Image (tube, rainbow, N blue to C red; front, side, top):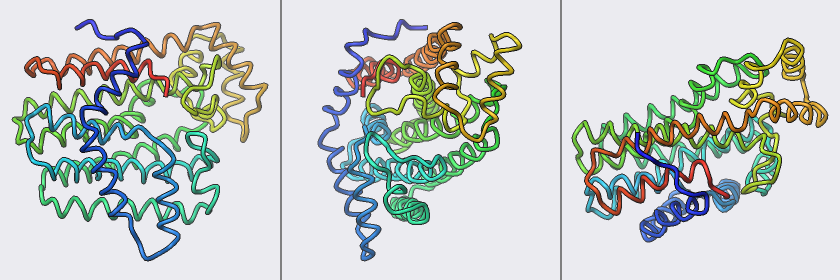
Length: 337
């Protein structure tokens, strides 16, 4: 495999390079989303505006635009429309996620469900998906319509699978990877493959970009899960311990359960099975995380997928567009926002 991960100080610049490269188109995506979410129902306007203005990297939209550019797409319309669709799917799932997880904050800002309630949040999330599907039908590409609609189905299945295994300290790593593949990586891969579909790429290029996106998404989520136990500092508004308190077994916890002795395994099984976990539970778990170097192990696994993502683009000619997308793989590991 290729030598991939640049120094940490360059990780954020890799994301900014992509954003600067596509800044004009990304602004058009933002404007299109705002236009499409206009409604005569005042509450929809308020909630969608609050949700979309709470920040976010628009990484999935950028991946759609960047993949289209890499494969030679020249038009100025369809890539913007479909990047907006991808972003709307992501935004809708976040609204639903916050209800499921009973989240009060996202990126340091109050979640819509904490302000307007769960019912409104679910319905506005559905509204975002509905507008997205209208836009996909208007685009008229059956391959893209099939791809993005099946991706919405996969994300929902991932959520249900995660709920099904909530509170399981002995969750299999294979099941964990299935969950994040459905919940996170499927939309990353759909974003990058959509870009290839737009430019009429051959199947080899489509598969390469799909692999790039899927592995990037896996690395991104695994690194994010590691940060849940990375207690040295708060990064980009992430609430430390959020997954733990919600009873989600992610790779750091799976790692310490695999390596722990019988007493430690019993402790983990007991606290994960509780209705609510305490800060004392979290503190003890952090001790085990440190003892078994679970964060380091988790980042190693993420690095594996980073390398897979980087290498997936090997079939494309050496261009600045390719270089920027390959450099972006380091962002999933080393980002600071």
